Amino acid sequence: MLRALQGIVTTFGCACLLAAAQPVAADGPRKLLATKVQWSDATGAGGSMLFQGTIDSLGNLEGRVYPGNGMELLVAGTVGEGGSVSGSLDTIEHEHLGTFQGQLNAQQELEGALEVSGQLDSEWYAPADELPTE
Image (cartoon, rainbow, N blue to C red; front, side):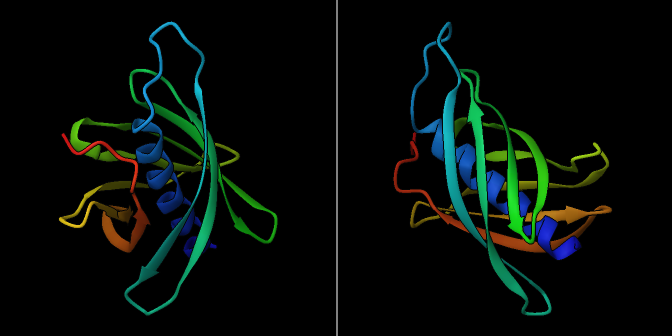
């Protein structure tokens, strides 16, 4: 189950960055987001997850990830300047699972890490073609 949760966190990070590329009026509605993110861990296990959520004009991200098998997790975070993203992953029952962070690499692709209990648990990657680079 933990591996599936890791993929969810990864998906959340990608969605946050994609949302940041689309400006939203401060008094306007939240922007809807949906994306898929790839992840892998030190054992060589990996997969992809679906993220669906929203982002507001301040870069606050909320949503859910769906790793498969009917599982659903909550994600919350922020998108910062230059495309950085960070946040947390919780169960539907609001039990904290871990934190994630990511940033754009030299190829303008989003990559990051998931930490569980303060230790690196997995890495994630997502295309970020529409992210701002300034």
